[in-house]
Length: 167
Image (tube, rainbow, N blue to C red; front, side, top):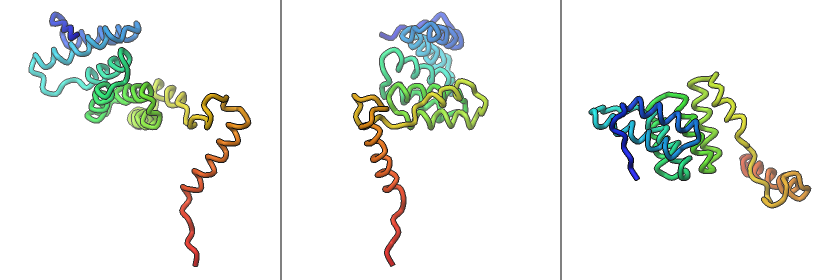
């Protein structure tokens, strides 16, 4: 499975991987990002580009599914540098994995670094902050779902408010 492209530099593999991602060819992109990381290792680079690792994780999640390896690659890259693009990739992978709360956190961290990052702002606005409807096979606007949602919200609010002690 591992197809390494030794004739290209790490930067060339990275750029070609970005192009493959934009053409919606995640498997090809994944191979290219993996090649970029290998080229750095082969050249003795001790602190590799976290962009390569982040895009490796994103392309892996798009090519197959958001596996632990894909999420871990993006988390490691985001944790080691303060680049808003790494938090963007991490948030995308979290969204693919259904981890909406973590995706929101990643997008917000990226915006703290770069408050005017347009793609981060767009994706943050698109994330549905509402929980799933109580009865998933009914429309959200169905009267039963609306009533049950109101009841659920009331119960959650009740749990969040600290109880006053009787004197």
